[in-house]
Length: 339
Image 1 (cartoon, rainbow, N blue to C red):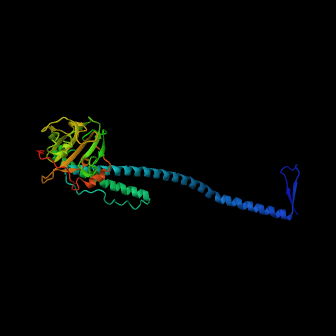
Image 2 (cartoon, rainbow, N blue to C red):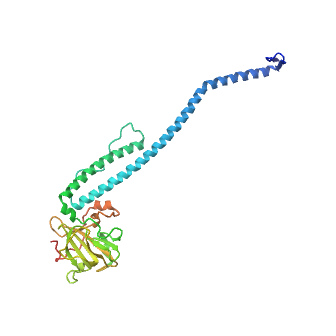
Image 3 (cartoon, one colour):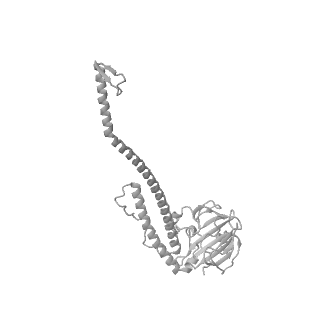
């Protein structure tokens, strides 16, 4: 048995006694020792706890910064993608203009191997973005060089530039392409034939304009007795562009020009009609190219030449370029001359 006495500071107060058994005393001592150890351990670990709290706060800040940086990276990646598309579209337009003007294609290339990003960039997304930006910079410089060459060619060949049939013959938004250039099933014979132009369905009376600087070589309707196929075109106007190109405007309702008349790009020559072999009001529009050997003008896809309207599958048209796969197209009548 153990006795514990508590003596108050005031001698007038009574002394208090506490009696403990040996077992209770041992538990009391053990508890005091354990409490001391816990207090000592807490005192030793408290700086680490404070440091852990500080590090946890910094980690939250770093995570937020990382999230924001990734958002910025994704925004920059989207901007790079949009710029890449814009450069690709500009390259397509440059190829198209070089093609229709017959300008020499330069050796400046686009789409080569991108430069390598610096090794210190370890994030895959960031490395890819940097490499894409480096490639975009190279492609942009090459495209500027190509554009300068094309502009120089156009300045040196102003008459050719004015003559090229480069606009849509009917106003934008007023037509629907119902029959493209190429092989098709004829709506009249129900058999395969080659369609040497575009059928642009539009309201009767819609203005039809010259697509380039030109001279009228025919305006009217071919006599049935002289040429059955061209008689089927109904009212037709044929223009000669600098003796390099020929454009044909068929199934017209009204003809507003006469043979020998000089036209500028955008001048009205007639209106959409339904004359000749036609199932509904539309314009049949053709572009034919005179080769260097002076042989029969060959039909080409007019969509390649039209710069003020974007066609579906535009890039594929340029890949095929402007060659006809040896079609059996209608030759020019003997009475029709380019001169």
